[in-house]
Length: 145
Image (cartoon, rainbow, N blue to C red; front, side):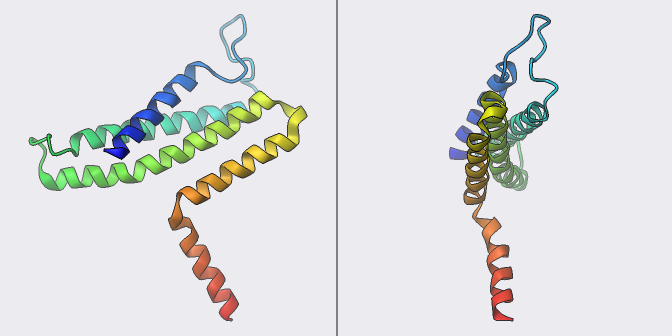
């Protein structure tokens, strides 16, 4: 149930961000900051977050117990796939936030931009505890040798 709420919220936020782009629109209805790298990275991150969360929502709909027409082993697979897609969608949403913040802050606030990128990266690392296990073992082996 929690994954369903999270995936729907991510899809909703990403959908809204696609139409309220950072920097606004010009008189020709094109994005003002479209030529900047951070804008392109924002669009890619936002689109990926939207697609992953939408697919996860669909998998979760088919994976519920109320979908009696779907065989049990397929429902378990759908739930398993969705549980992998929702955290990745959240990570891409964090990336879209960082790139959008970069665009809004402009180049004059380099220190603040570095702060946003550092904390956004840290939140991705802390959200996925499995990332730390390989680093922990590699560090342990290095210290042991």
